[in-house]
Length: 86
Image (cartoon, rainbow, N blue to C red; front, side, top):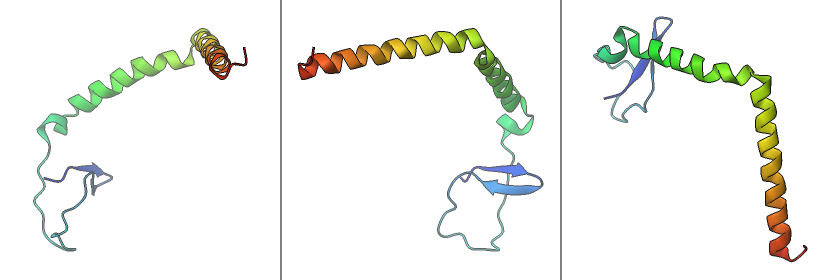
């Protein structure tokens, strides 16, 4: 079964179309009951909004930057030790 999505009144396949299908061939389309009422996509949208809300927090970005700098320094020190430069 090929999954597809409806956008602007046009059906777009999400999966590769079988090779034995030809242009103009009639197909039977059945709505996916999980997403037909929009509840799954609405839940996904809410979850993504919560997860991405933290991306605008400057304090979190500063903290992340500090962690990345520390990890970078540790990695450089390890390479220097491995190469016998320290």
